[in-house]
Image (cartoon, rainbow, N blue to C red; front, side, top):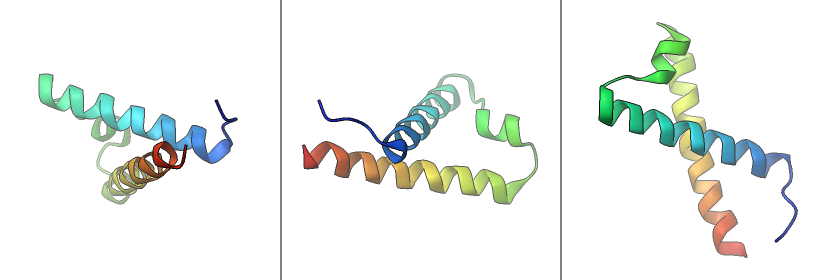
Length: 65
């Protein structure tokens, strides 16, 4: 297995956070990102965008191997 660089680890963590958040929303209607960031909408949106970009990167990472 190839060594992971910093970007790989950041993307992996963000995808895990996003997956856990979606699971919590689906099971309990609890949005962890909103709970942590409160009413700071631009930060919430930034997290969601970063999670989405991380998912795209992880698809690329999985396909390049």
